[in-house]
Length: 262
Ligand code: OAD
Picture 1 (cartoon, rainbow, N blue to C red):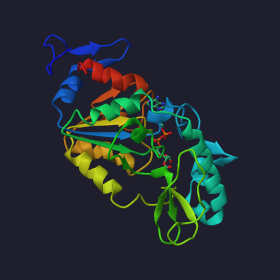
Picture 2: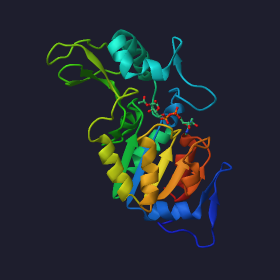
Picture 3: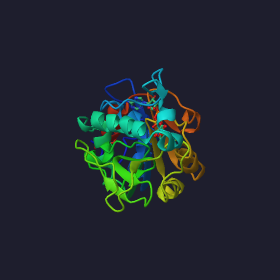
């Protein structure tokens, strides 16, 4: 175990897999004060949550691509179908548990002076793992929002939900960002501020195709942060990253911690 310093002779560290955590990343991890982790669907893949893309396929629901069923137009055209898709996904999630990647990220929040976890996921698994103050860029499957007064209400992961707003009685919709919609007010601003101010940025399990989330690592890089990607596949961001760790988040994140002796 290293007491906060690297052994001078080691340029990189080979762990039990083929993966090598570079000396530079270990130094950055030890020295960093402000850390941003941006996560996407891949971080929940090992919990059993299907990703949207990657692995050669894209999600389809009853013949509709996910970007059609999860669109703002569908809320006006067929709210019941939108709820059917989100209820299905919420039921699927109710039996799923955080995996080692979620747990590792939860443990990192007390390691750094300032650790900001920004997720595109709506599954709530980061919070179940113990992460606090998670910036949810795309909302949560465990909340509904009124179409009229915009009041939000929690939905039990496993239980029934109401179709009506508790405040005004009008219909509610899933409190998630659908295709064609803006991000929740304040969420992107908080994430961009964290990106501008971080020393170290992890990009974990995202195809980096959906903006504005995909812009965050570039903001961090331009502001001088060391950027590290964790993904079994390359993405459009891979070339700008200082380090690309090719592997599953549930394997790689614990290896990063192990490489610095935590
Ligand atoms: P995607 O499904 O687009 O990408 C998942 C990424 O995870 C791919 O790059 C995979 O290679 C990677 N991956 C798969 N298994 C992994 C593992 N075990 N460990 C690490 N990475 C793994 O998911 P997102 O990038 O999150 O938005 O998608 C972004 C947004 O697109 C979603 O938030 C959603 C969707 O439209 C909305 O619904 C608004």
